[in-house]
Image (cartoon, rainbow, N blue to C red):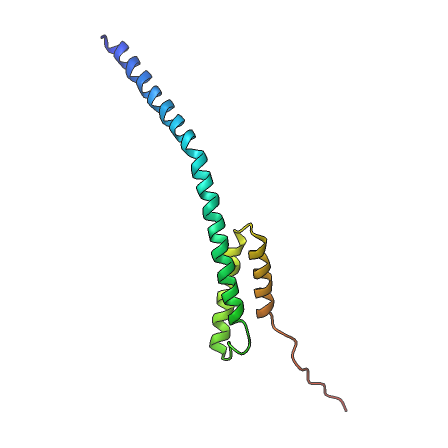
Length: 114
C-alpha cells in the first residue's frame, strides 16, 4: 500500500475501535447505573442507622461533660454534611432532629428589679 492509503486505513481502524469501545460503554452504562442506585440505597440505610446512634448519644444522660457535648456537636455536623447528599427523607428527618438536639436551649434568666 501507498503511505497515504495506509494512513487512511489506520485512521479508519482507529475510528472503528473508538466506535466499538463507545458501544461497549453504552452497553455497560445501564448496569453501572443500577449498581449506583443500589449503592445509594445502601448508603442511605447506613446513614439512617448512624443517625439513630447519634440520636441516642444526644440524650442528656449520655452526654454529661463538656467534652462529650463537643463530640456530639461534631458528630451532628458531620452527619449533616453526609445527609446533604442523600435523597432519602428519613435521613433528612434525622438530620433535623439531630440539629434540634444541639441548639442551645433557653435557660433561666436572671431578672433584677428594685
